[in-house]
Length: 465
Ligand code: ATP
Ligand code: MN
Image (cartoon, protein in one colour):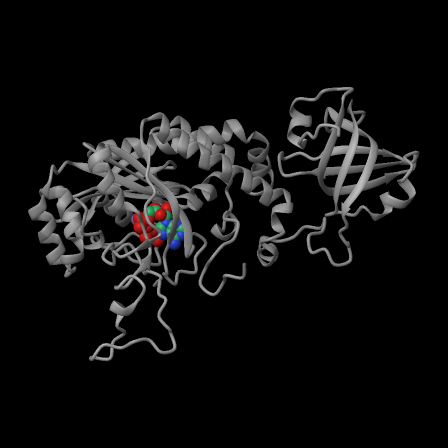
């Protein structure tokens, strides 16, 4: 059988004159008066479609070609030829066209007409057949590999942290419970509460909200590690940047402080942007034309300039002095809202901003205390269009201070004893951060809603597929 080539292979390294087999889906079909039919095929490998020229002289032209509609799958045998039209350099002169699976245009929900992102959210299983969603899928793939490439080149170990966790004190967000108990009739303790000691694990269990604590354990022996996997938050936030299931990248580095952490975050983000601009030029041009006109300028300016660094306290002063009317009033001690973060990065600095040294009251128990006793060595990276894209910290490595924080915040010390061991035995300054993968994809593509940058989004009230 003639060798198969992908649309990408044919368009990027043509072999003019050679025979080829293409297996793909019909994106458009056009009949010309000259007894020719033009098919544009796409197989997901490349942004552009491959044009197939079908002559009416083909034996099955009259029987088969009328059955080819948008969405149908086809197998084409043909010859690679220099294209006559201006749009692309190569086309296929068909020798044989076979319909593999028909697609009835009367009921196919993915038409040629402009469909809104909202409409397509009802067809998550079909939306990757559109230019926008196939481009996003390829960008996601390139970003995922760039993440591994960045860390692997620097000697980081990819650590697989558990999805089901017995930790309930991570404090990063509301958790989903994992149970095999009969929810209609769970066993009860004497006080009437559900008796989770009879549950599958002999105790309560949840889906992880972060792999950080486990990553710390491995950083404190392997030096530098990162996790990259699914993360779950049961928070009822119906926003354009929150999902109930998302992917998070969490590097954790021993013998590192907050400065090292901030530098790593900046190098990391820049590496990811550079890689996408280099590997996905057609997708990025499409996002510029159809999604966000300023996207290429933004990404290039982020690449060329150092991130702005300032403390939370300095940021609060700037926000208060700005005279801007915010929905949530700014005062020292508040958790900055998206509107504040975006004002800083979009209006004040017009660049990514790394805010450090947050009030201890709004941050997790494990963050390293500053000498002022009021702030901790936390950092958030804020980017235009999104706000917070990364959250991180230097971790408390002093066991007494850490015990103090656990008590002060009213957390149960028992389940965290293993975590204290990391400070008991060869404690070391260490730091890390979490990057929300979908927020990164939003930032890179300019897509406004996080539901559109993950293949099958889970949000409150929505989990169809
Ligand atoms: P936010 O304040 O924006 O809700 P967070 O402070 O709760 O985020 P962290 O616990 O710091 O988030 O998580 C690290 C990173 O994971 C965030 O900077 C963000 O990029 C991403 N992230 C957090 N929650 C979500 C979510 N529900 N959906 C998608 N990404 C998220
Ligand atoms: Mn955060």
